[in-house]
Image 1 (cartoon, helix red, strand yellow):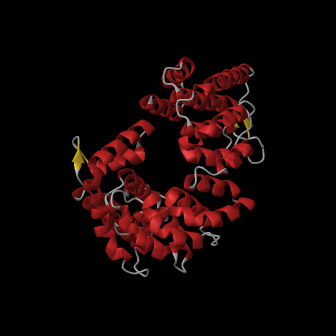
Image 2 (spheres, helix red, strand yellow; image 1 turned 120 degrees about the horizontal axis):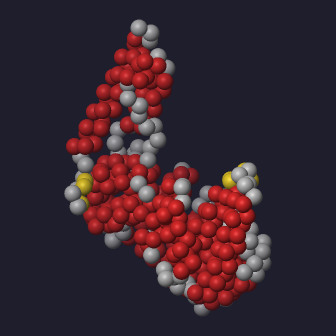
Image 3 (cartoon, one colour; image 1 turned 135 degrees about the vertical axis):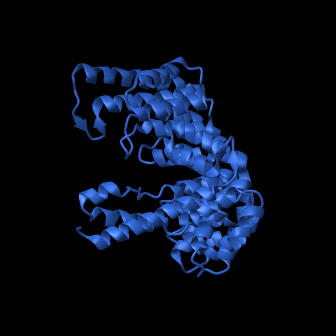
Length: 408
C-alpha cells in the first residue's frame, strides 16, 4: 500500500474528530420545543433566512440558560485545526483511500454563529461576567481578547463590564483597544465612566471613529466631550462627529449640518448614513432624503442599487413613511421593464454585476422587499414577493422572499 503511515495518521485524525463530535453531542445545551441548543445552532448556521430568524427567537426565549452552551462552542479544543490537518493529509492519499475516509468541512461557521447568538440574547452580567472574569484577570491570559470581545454582548448589569473595557482601551496593544471600542460602542449611557478614556481615544487612528460613536451613544452624560467633537467638524470626520454631537446636545445646530450635506452628491451617502443611525431623532431630515431619492440612480460598490441603501436609512428614521412608496413603485416598474427587454433580446452576457436578467430579478426583489417593509399591504411589493416565491428558479431569491413575507 502506498503511503501507509499517512493512511494511519489520517485514520487517527478521523477518530479524534469523531471523538470531538461525540463530546459535542453529549453537551448539547438546554432544549426548546424538543430540540437542543446544539440543534438550534445548526438551524441557525445552515438554514434559510426565515428559519434563522426562528432560531434567533428560540435563543431569545432560552436567554441566560443558553450562555454556558454557547461559550462552550467558543472554547472548544482546536477542532478546526485538526479538521484542516486531516483534510490536507487526506488529500495526499491515493484516491481509493480518499473515498474510504470521510470528508470534513474546514470552514468554521460555529464560532461566528455563537457570537451572533450571544449578541441576540444579550446575557445578564450575573451569568456572563462570572465566566469571563478569570479570562479578564490578566491581559496576558490567552482568552483575554476574546473576553473583551464578549463583553460587548452583556445586557442587564452591563455597567459591571465597563471598567474592564476602559482598562483595555488604555492598553498599548492596538487590538485590545480596538476590541474594547467595539464593545463600548454598544453600551450607551452605561459607559458614562468611560468618557475620559473615550476622549483620549479620539487621538488614536485605530479607534477614533468608534470613540466618536461611543461618545454619541452615551448621550447627555458625554457633554464634556463636546469641545473635542466640535473640533472634528472641520475634519473629514465631520459627519460622524455631527451625529454624535446631536445625540449629546439635541438642541444644538448639528443636525442642520447633516441635512444640508444631503443635497451635496459628494457627501450625500455619508450624511444619510449618519442620519439613519440617529433614527427617529433625525425626523427633520426626511424631506431632504426623499428629495434625494428621486434622483438616486447609481450603484454601490457591491453592485447593488444605491437607492436601496438610502431607503434603508430612511426606514430607520421613519419606518412607516408612505411618501417613499410612489418612488419605489416607479423604480420597480422601470426594473421590470428592463428585465423583460433583456429576456426578449436573449441577452445572457455578463456585465459588471452579473447576468442582466438575474440582476433585474434581484433588483426587483430588493425593491419589492422595501415596499413590503414600509407597508405590508402594498400590492406591488406583495405581488413581486409571491411571484418570486412561487416561480423563481433561484433558491436564494425564494428564501429571501420567504424571509420578507415572514417579517411582514
